Image 1: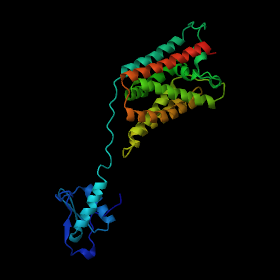
Image 2 (image 1 turned 90 degrees about the horizontal axis):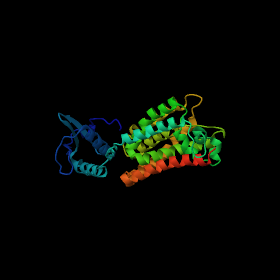
Image 3 (image 1 turned 60 degrees about the horizontal axis):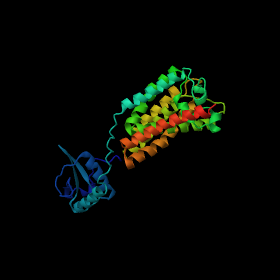
Image 4 (image 1 turned 90 degrees about the vertical axis):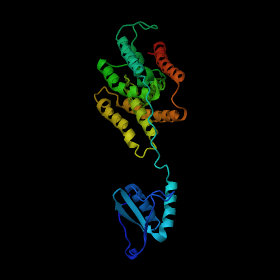
Length: 322
């Protein structure tokens, strides 16, 4: 806002009769204005070339105009107030979170149990024993040759306990928030989508011999989803960056700390997981605005779909992998 003088008195109008503007234009009552109201009104008068001056009082300000311009000034201010009524818009109400942390924790525990399962010699579907990592890792060349299931199965595998523990502890924070925000069903389904898309583009860009495992791609997808959800949800906020810069900063921090550390780290998969999380998150939040969160039945159906995708991907790996 321009640095408008607080008090203006035109030299050639010292002898004029100055009248205070009412603070409530509708009924012409009140004379004391807040500082913000005085500054806004003075800018309106200035733009309409109406002389004015402001006087400080104990409880606020008075805005005065020449008596012969009082009616015009009131008309201009009434028009200004009418055109700007309801602006800026009120920020959207906070979306209440769903208390489904127990469900999320059980899913994370299941991921840990599955990792423990991969350490044992298990015979299944003609494999004696099953080479889980060999069948399910994100092998770039085999993915591009049609082994689509690797896009999903790779998200459920981990190189060692440290790798698993890091993903569960750090990723659990973002995944839990996403599940409480969208409900578990859509959250896990969108996580799979972001992770699978990230693995696909990474496989397309990498050397055909490139291999990778880990849920990190989906975790970075969760961070992208949360950032996009915040951007859409608070897009009408006067300062929306306050609401979505934290998830973006968290993603960049995680990318620097986890995504780029060590020669075995798949930076591309992490980055693409985050980038795919953004448009998926945009679409998800717009859908929630239009239709609302899914009900219990739809949420259960989406959760079963996510489970079915993982189970189906592993069944395809056992039948056709190699």
